Image (spheres, rainbow, N blue to C red):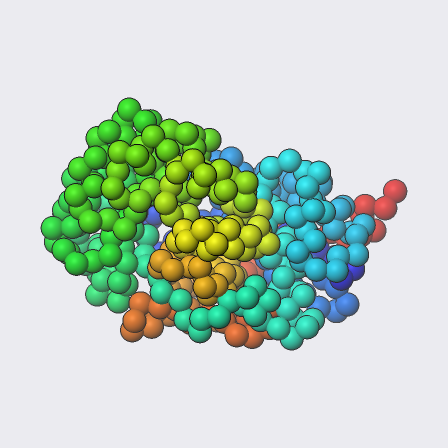
Length: 374
Ligand code: OSB
Ligand code: MG
């Protein structure tokens, strides 16, 4: 694939309800939609960096910069035979996995459309539908949280994830557990605790949780190991697993018993699949995390989550849990068994609603190979 043109759209989309985590509260979701052009065809990719460096150090601003100044010239000067070549191609650029993953996703879409093959097939996914749950943000009080959870259960979600932070952890989780004794329940701290502060989480061990996600800092595999040894409940790492090597080392040192896989966090789908394969070979369950994606990223998460090692429900909710209007023409809905159907059309299997895309675009740029000749 010789890429001769590339477009980046910087989007800001209103969320249907504010989403609050230990790192902040958001009413809008910023992201970058990336288009790659080759031989009259277009591939779309979503860069999941957000406006603020709260979940990760990358932002829509840093990703724009890295794509424009460093990734685009590498892509234009190469003839890419497969999207799987992208990680090596961009390896001279240190870090910035979300920027890299956004381009790689667009190449997967393009390659799939050129060959008439779905992303699911290209990745080796098998299931027609994937089990999903919903990630519930911090609410004003435990009573309000119970009501919000009740309404998601009424929508049909069979697995609930609660966001927690210091002071809003055991009480909130216990209230939900008492109200819904049989619901599949898990919590996510987004790195909000130190090892000392995390001792206050020990009562969570009696609430029959599927897992406790990322209690400690991103760069702290060792203290996660210490914490895991004092919990019966599996610790699941999200932010800490930034590469295949981190996944291997985390498992070798028993820093977690479950891994959340997000393609954006690990530099793309090629790396995501390698982490899946490693975990599968070791019998470690994985599940697909979410980043409040648009329909583009959601299509990709569904394809990824259809691989056989994804044995726990993903953070992949229906389109209407996130946005009033999405930028894809295809909308994702929840099946009665709390699953979502994996797209089957070539590439990502979604098409772009240009009117909605334009409505939510803050800035856009079109780059061509000729811009970089000098
Ligand atoms: O930690 O899993 C997370 C959203 C943005 C950033 C980080 C996280 C999340 C979620 C939402 O939990 C998952 C979703 O997209 O539904
Ligand atoms: Mg998480």
